[in-house]
Each structure stands twice: as structure tokens, then as C-alpha cells.
Length: 268
Image (cartoon, rainbow, N blue to C red; front, side, top):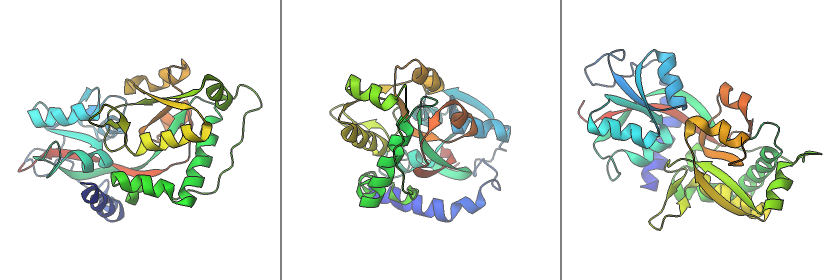
């Protein structure tokens, strides 16, 4: 499965992106894109893509729910992240009878912290060091996302002279990470433990900080509120770096390439 995902990402991210913006969005369903109903995660880049395209859409609580909408026939299609599509649809996955057709956007993932937080700078340093020593790529290979990695430039942690989030987290002894169930970035193994590329990178940051890492499932539409209320310290869940996101949060450098893709049933 991880090899399949890596091959899919390599093909889509090196060749398929040249077609972005030129596709019809309806695959071969026989319907026009304007007559279809698309399931999207509320507050996501997929929802934003649907708005920009003028699509009819149904907002649901997660991308996993969007896939269930299509599988059940409640919605004609879903708009989800390419990385999730590679892990969740097609032969040998949870949804073998679904496929992805058009790529609507190209984008990059980043990690979100409270506005003004020095934690973003700290994470950038961990990104740079782990990219340089190969540990980031090793973690990525575990989940088949190595082809999506963004090259990391050298970065040095710049601590805030006052109200340091890094000091706050160290003093408390834990890093609280806001996530949703989003394979292959953050999801639970058979024992209920959070794993995935993002989860493992968050654990690496926790290790460098010398603190425990707690994962908290959040309502994606309320992610900024969760940060600002200090219910979580960071949003680390395949988050697209949109202008809305970067204006509301202190974001890290981009670490993964992604696209928003249309998912439809096989044979339609």
C-alpha cells in the first residue's frame, strides 16, 4: 500500500499538476460539474476549491466523512487531499470502488501555531535538521509520502524574548497537537495510538523539546479558536497554507506538496 501511494504521488505531483484548472471536475459521471453535489470537509481547502469553482457542495465534519458520502451515494463526488486519496481509495484500501479523477489545485502543507508563536521557528529548525540528516525522509517512506516532501532550507530557532510558547510547552511538559483522522498524516493504529507522517514528525519535535506529545481530535472548522484558547499548541494535520490560514496563524515552512482531487465511484 505504501509503495502504491508513493507511485501515485510521484505521477500526480510531477505530471498531473500541469492539467490543474483545465479539467471539467466531473470525471466521466455523465453529469456536468455544475449539476453535481460535492462532499467537502468544512473549513478545508477542498471546500474553498468548491466555492471558487462555483460547485454545489455539502460540508461534512471530515474528509473521511466526505468519502462515506460518495460511497453511500449521498453525494456525487468528494473533494479531498491527494495524499488522503492515495491512502484511502482504490484497490486494497477502505474504498476499493472509488477513484480520483481531476486535480483542482496545487498546494503545500504547513504546521500552524498561535499567531506570533516562536514554536513555528522551532519546528522549522527540526524540519531543516531532519531533512538534512535523512530522518524526515525515513519517516515519510514509512507512510509512502516521500515523493511529496518539500526540500527544507537551513533554519535556526529564534526564541521570543517574552511570552515564549516554547518555554510554556517545556514548562508544562507536553506538546498538545490538534488533529483529525486523516490517513496517511494522522490516524490511529489497531491499538488506538496516533501514527502517520504528521504524527511521527510531531513526536520528533516533542522528543527534541523533551516533552510528551498529546494528540487531540478537533473540529477542523474551529482550529484557530482551539489554538488561541490554548486547548492545543499546534495544528498538525495536512493543513494547506492558504492566505486565510497564514493570516490567522504563525505557520511553519511548507513541508509537503499536495493537491485537491475529485473522487467519484468507479464506472461513473
